[in-house]
Image 1 (cartoon, helix red, strand yellow):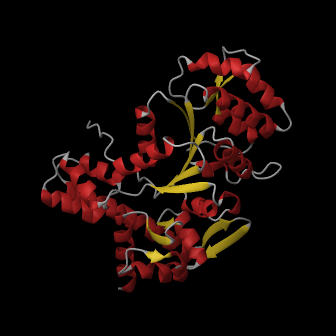
Image 2 (cartoon, rainbow, N blue to C red; image 1 turned 90 degrees about the vertical axis):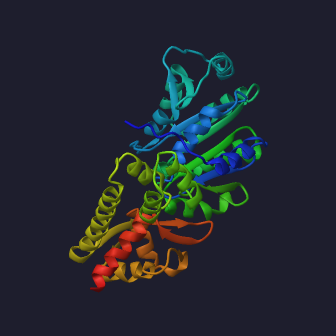
Image 3 (cartoon, rainbow, N blue to C red; image 1 turned 45 degrees about the vertical axis):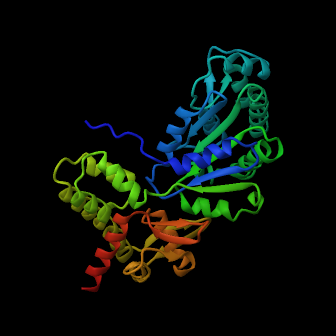
Length: 358
């Protein structure tokens, strides 16, 4: 089995390192289309960080979180052996041999105290702040939360996400204590974040997009693609890392593999349109329930027949929401453009529209 090594991302990593070299002051939201390599880049970055930094990486992907208890279990890395009543003492004790962690270390007795409190968020944030204060005396804390949108709808005495935002602002802009990075592929969540008044002047946004053509060609060179195969890969997959890896692993018949991937994507889009035709395609937006018709979807997809991207305002709100939720379209809230999630999606949309016209 071929092992696909981490590739490039020099520009994005340089930008992140420039952020890390300065005093914490803003929350950094890392966003981009699905499968553009955000988590892979972050994992590589964590491994390469100098010992001056103390990274705490929390991945919410695939975690079923419905309340504070669930969130606490993901947020903290419980030390079953550690029974310490003083946060300062505990932070000092683990600094000596602390490697990469999948949560914020906490002794089991302090975790149980937080878990039993009525106002869990208050004690949770208090512990984290005290912990980071002590860590910062020796190393710079870096808190990274991947797929933050998972907790976006949790509401217990107010939305958890807003309590997190307030805490992140305190860690960065107020205390200059800890770098905070929030990673998400959910462009509707990022749009909400980008327009959030409480984050204006307190956050920045870093796009991790698919590879450009030059980087894609260099990547494929590493795996022995011929010039013809490289052009085939670009025409079908663009610079989407996960699709390029599929072609690398497909062996010699790369054209057949590319056609299979396109056929599968066409089928998925046709399935969505069929659902809209038969039952109406249902989506939720806040408390609202929206039903999209086949005609509504086709009318909007038609706009991509001869254009690679649109201004965000060119699509109706309901279809934009539906096709983003279906991972067919990607909204870049910073640039205010909307485009298919990948070159493969763009080709699939055009093939579907061609069939519909015929």
